[in-house]
Length: 286
Image (cartoon, rainbow, N blue to C red; front, side, top):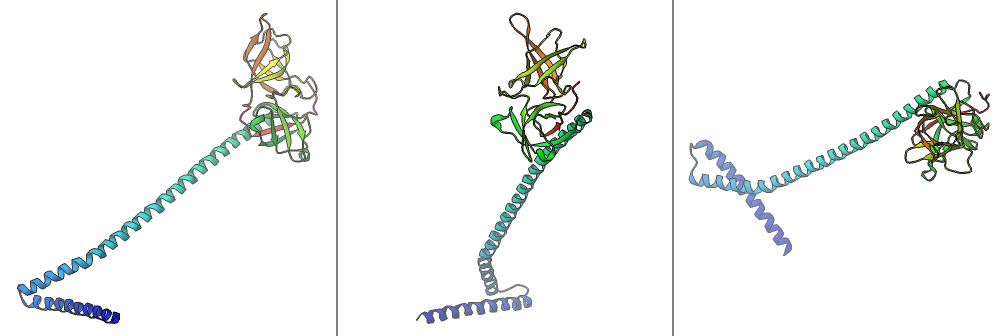
């Protein structure tokens, strides 16, 4: 029974196809012979038009859907490509910025090294700096294999930033001049005054709020004023004399009108450097 209905449907479809083809043929034949088609001919043509519209509507609809889907897919692909380009651009900008910073640091180190002609110099990179000890310590990528020794001064930019306190084979630990560790050896410094005399003291602490070094234990505090240079004094034997530290920015006096603290702006931004120069301490003290 099922085969019968299937065959019946097939026969009906074939008959419809034959009728449609016959009508198209007749339409073409009679249309060519007559100036104006008969009413039956017109009805056949109208019927064919209706059938054509009915058949073409879903086909055109499917075609439009396919075009829309393709257009949407193309838009999605373009958006992905644009996003990828933007990500690449952001990454490139970040790399360029990092390279510019590194290039600037290297130029500063080259300029610094030219002024340290009396010292043996070793350039190194900062490889680690813990946020918990940001103002106290950092790690550089040179150690005993490169000739690094304990207590060697470390400079960056144009000024002193610390000294070596621990040496491993391939890296070393630097104690910064801004350290607040009480057991650290403090840096002995001096102020070069306008009259040619010097005032000695030590870097006693670091003012984190203003990013200033604070010089304490100041002797002969007379005639200290802003703008005067601060250098290492060489006292104590750990650091050679004459390494630039910074400039005086203000002087604080105690209740008796005596100088108790001298605030020094470091020659180098102690929060922002990546390249350092380690210099030999085996030099003559001036």
